[in-house]
Image (cartoon, rainbow, N blue to C red; front, top):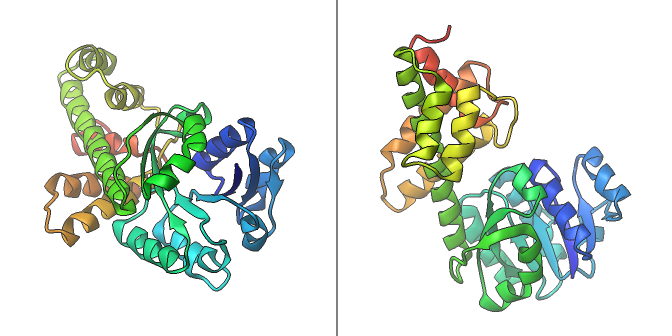
Length: 294
């Protein structure tokens, strides 16, 4: 396929390399030129502008960090809405809010373009090895056309329906559950530590008992070992996800009290100077609140 890829951050690098290695005709763009160096050396074409990137593309993937960046990418004078050719698919794969996905979907439809929300679940190491979980939503014919891309990026796929915002809601809810799980692990780890229990022993109880699943295995280990410098998603990204969940809930009248707890712990982590560490560092904020650390 003829694919354009925008956004080569921690997740985007691994995903774009997977696409290139699968033999697709790939052109990439990132505002930070250094991000394109390695993949350019590996054989991808490096665009110097969005106009160059979008020319003769069947699909353009964007992997951007927040809604403001996606809004600018689509709605600016030299943005995708004015550059994509008829029937070209735009697939945003980052974490975004429901409102922005609705807005860009309408814009693309008005311009005879196609939007598929192709959200992914997983950390950068999973992106690099094609082990992501994919949650796409959009027109069925477009989903089918994108199957060669999905095949190289993920191990599981759950099609959320024909409305792109459905996939966005699933992605937001999934991140909310994950963040809440991290918060609970941090609280429980502080509790057992106050009673002199080895954190690694409690970690083994969790994963070999009722909670033997990837979320508890990965984040329980990070918290037990206090390995917060190996960043999958930073505190800042986690805070963005919490705010997206609260906004989504407010817009449809769904209270999310647990999300407020998670958000407050993330804000504590920012106050502690840990905003660039993995968001599991909210367990350190819990430990400080419990008198275990200064």
